[in-house]
Image 1 (cartoon, rainbow, N blue to C red):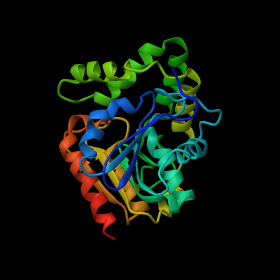
Image 2: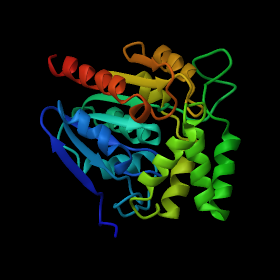
Image 3: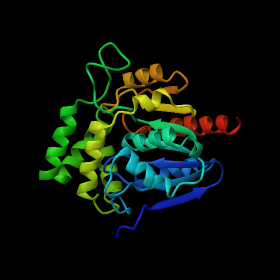
Length: 267
């Protein structure tokens, strides 16, 4: 049963950290990881609109999601976005910097689709082919379950025991009712259309980017391009990780996050 508004759960002690998950998932996907972080920070887990236990909203844009998130977030916090969750987090940092102590991007991109004509590298902006997201949108209408399985497969491609990871992810996803189809469509459209390179370039809050060297959805070259756009940001690429570093490399990912937060709490 979905709640009116956004479902949230807060636990731990220390600086506030809001964690925003990715497409087709819910906050339970990284509950164990959040409990590790909660040894040093106060975590707020959120289900995006139409996902997990949250009701959907009409405006599934970065701005619409940001507005919804701000209604339930602490007055000022560190914000962590994974994958699609990166987009509303960076929108909040750009438009409401007084609500943001820092941003942490995990397996995220400021523009998820590749662009052969503009960007931070000679060959254009690194990302996924637009046709892939268009195919996901088409497949979603015909076969929701198969599309989600394919997406999970992309997130774990190239990892040791990829089949086992997909099985574990599938079980976590199934802990809540399936996402609202309109939210899934809205999320894919957001991934296809959003371009926050301008916001990222002018970002003044401390920012950390954590990518996986084997990620098929956000190539590590995207981190290089993001660093070129915003030299004030920090970039860490985890060797051996793909799109789920918090699941496959939890200790290293947690250390990067908590050490970054601690440094910027002291400032």
